[in-house]
Amino acid sequence: RRVTAAIPLADSVRSPDLWLWLYTARARALWHLGRRQEAERDQLRALSLGADAAKLYNVADAYHNLGHVYEGQGRWRDANRPIDRYVDIARPMYANLRFSSLLDAGEMRWKAGWHASARVAFEDMVRVGEELNENFVYAGEYYERIGDLQRARDYHRRARAEAAGNTA
Image (tube, helix red, strand yellow):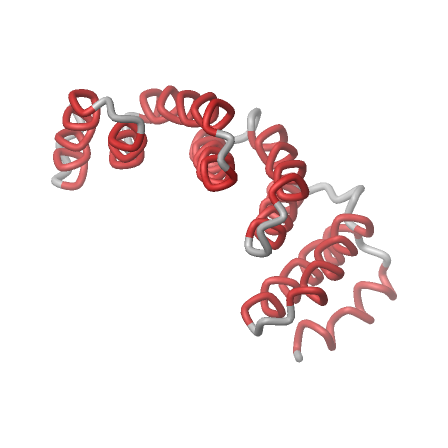
C-alpha cells in the first residue's frame, strides 16, 4: 500500500528513477501475492517510465525482475530478452552484479532446455568468479551439472576453503 501511495509523488516530480524503483517494488510484491498479470504490467510500466533513469543498477534490476516474472510463467522466450538486457547492462558494472546476471542467465536457459546457450553464460560466470576469487560453489554446481566431476570437485573444495575464509 505504501508503494502504491507513493506513485502519485513520482508522477508529480516526473522522476524516472523513482518510477522505476516504485513500480519494480510493487511488481515484486504483486508477484509474491500471486498476482502475476499485475506484476507483469507494473514491471513493464517501470521499464517504460524509467527508461531514462540515471541509476543503471535499478534499470538492471528491473530487467532482472521482468525476466523472472516471465520465467515463473514458463514463458522462456519472453524471459530471455530481459535477462539478456540484464546481462548487457550489468557487464560494465561491478563484478558481483556481472556474476549474478550470468548465473541467472545460465539457470534460466538451462531450465528452458537451451543447454548450449546456458553453458556459454555459465562459462562466463566461472571466469568472473575467478576474477573475483569467490562464488566457487556455483562453478562447482555447474560442472557437476554437465558431468565434469573432476572440475566440480575442485571447485567444491575451493568453495569450502572460501567459506572458511581461505581463498588463496
